[in-house]
Image (cartoon, rainbow, N blue to C red; front, side, top):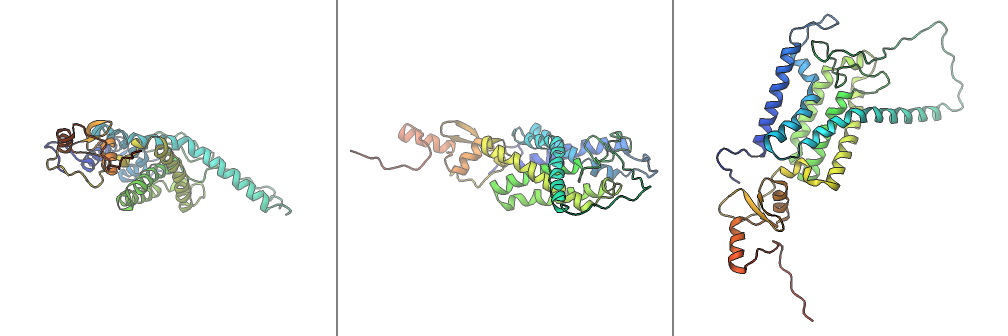
Length: 311
């Protein structure tokens, strides 16, 4: 389907939104962390600091995409990312509680071994309150603090996993695996790069980075899947997949960028209502609408006719 001169299609608009978001994050990182010295004495890496801010960029992307495309659907991914922060702690508590129950059941009837005398173990309590910028941003959490010692994974990884899972489930279930491959590949690359850049969040506490990534995926799928189920059930027009064009079934010879939706009127072909009507094969082109008005005096519903019943 062609576009009027000066207009962008859905994927061109997304590329523009992503470029604006990336440019803003790169500028902030370059101005704040480039060439500074970390508390450990190492020189701050510009690329590493950029990877640490992946979840921030993904949440900002949802707002930028809507600001540029006016589709009004990408803000939902920002809500998913913001909600993942408090929900991560809740899921960690639930998982720890389940682990404690299983541990007690496994150790029931066994005699606990006494602790060795004279041994004191000191654990970093976390929440060091490192500054957001200036070369001291750990990337373990969204606000820059260290990972909590009782947590199995970092808050920032969970935010990334939740947003990626939300997009993937929506595209996979509503537009097929082919359309979901892009976010799947990009999500794997982003999570892998982010995990490597914040590996010290795990190694400093003697935890496995691989296990941390797997826990982040688990929490992210739970959070992203819950939000997808909510919007799919109650507000499907706000899902990002609604603005991705389906196969055009309109037989119009001239593309005007608008379709007639029975009961709604003329709407943009890229709008959620237009895309849904095209998918349901109930949309009419302006030419078809005019022809129907001329021949029958009414547009109709766009649905196939049914035989009338007579008594």
